[in-house]
Image (cartoon, rainbow, N blue to C red):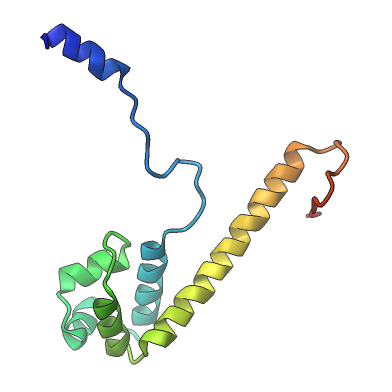
Length: 131
């Protein structure tokens, strides 16, 4: 392929993101990381302290807390134990956060859809929220 042809092909190619910019669903790894960090900070502990207690590398735990890495169940169990939690307790905290975020996202979506059709008669089964 000539240089000009490859430039034309590259210009015509479209990048399709895995997650559209408008997506509002929270990612599991972000929620897990937020919960781990929140618990660690609530205990006034350093990243190094928790990493050492859980026998997890400090850089890796940092990546998990920032939502950049998907932690395995073994790493999550070790981090939970280092924080004085069971894996079930950690996952319950993550579930509560996910429900909180999902309900906020759902209300935002319903409000957006409703405001976009203001003045139109409600469709059968439609729920409209007043704010």
